Amino acid sequence: MQFLVYILAYPLLWLISILPFRLFYWLSDCVYFLVYHIIGYRIKVVRENLALTLPHLNKKERKEVEKKFYQHMCDMFLEMIKTMSISPEEMQKRFTVTNIEVLREYEKKGKSVVLVASHYASWEWLLTINKRIAFRGIGVYKKIANPYFDKLIRKIRSKYDAELVETRKTIPLMAQNQRDGILSLYGLASDQSPKLDRIFHSMKFMGIEVPVHTGAEMLAKKYDLSVIFVKVNKVARGYYEATIIPIAEDPKDYANFEITEKYLREVEKQIYEAPEYYLWTHKRWKHRVD
Image (cartoon, rainbow, N blue to C red):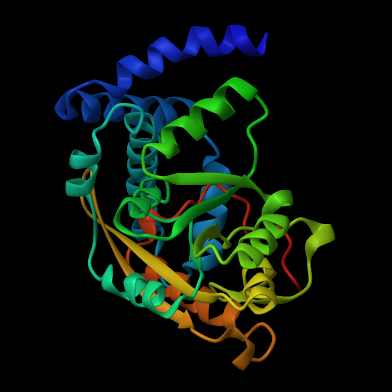
C-alpha cells in the first residue's frame, strides 16, 4: 500500500515541481483558498496560538497575521516540492546567506558546529547552505513512515550535500565524527514542543512558560561544538535571506540552559518582527507550566 501511494503521488509532485514560477505560485494561491477558506486546516489551533502569544495585537491585526500565515505556509510547502527539480544555481539566487564567512571561520579553527534553526520562513531551503561550506552537513530529522517517501527526501537533500540522520542515531554519529576528526555541521530545529518523557527544563517562550528542547545545548557541551543560530527572512515571494548569528563558541563556558535561552530569545525576536512566517499550526504551547 505504501508503494502504491508513492507511485500514484510521485508523478503529481514532479509535475508541480517543474511548473514555471508564475504558474507555481498561482497553484499556491489556489491551495491557500482551499486550505484556509474551505477546509480551515487547524484554524482553531492557529487562532489560539496567536491570541495567546500576540495579545498586544487586536483581533483585526491577528486576523491579518492569520491570513498571511496561511498564504506563506502554502508557498513554503509547495516550495518543498519545487526542491525536487530546481537547479542548484536557481536555488542560490533564491536562498542567499549574508555572512557565510562566519561558518568559514569555524572551519579554519577546526570547530564543528551545531546550527539551531526554527520553524520560520523556509527551513527546508536552509539545507542548501551545505553547498557553500566544507563542513560535512548533517540534518537531524524524524524518519518518514513511508520508506519510499523517506528515500525520496534523502535523495532531494543529497543534491545540496545534506546528509540526514534520524534523531536516535545522532549521538553515535557525533561520537564517531569526533573520533575520526571529521568537521561537521549539525542542523536542528529546536523550537517546538518536546515529548513529555524528554522534558528537562522549561522557560518562557513568547511570554508563556513551556517545556523546551535542550538537546542541542547538551550535545554541544558533550562534544565541544560551537552553537550558531540561523535567522531566515522572507524578502519576497520565493526569495529568502539567511543571517548567521553566533550563540556560543565555547559551550562549556555557559551555565546550564543559558545557550537554550539565548537561542529562544533570537527566535522570539524573529517572530515579533514578522509573525506571519512562523509555523502556527503546531500546538507549541499545549504543555504550559502554571
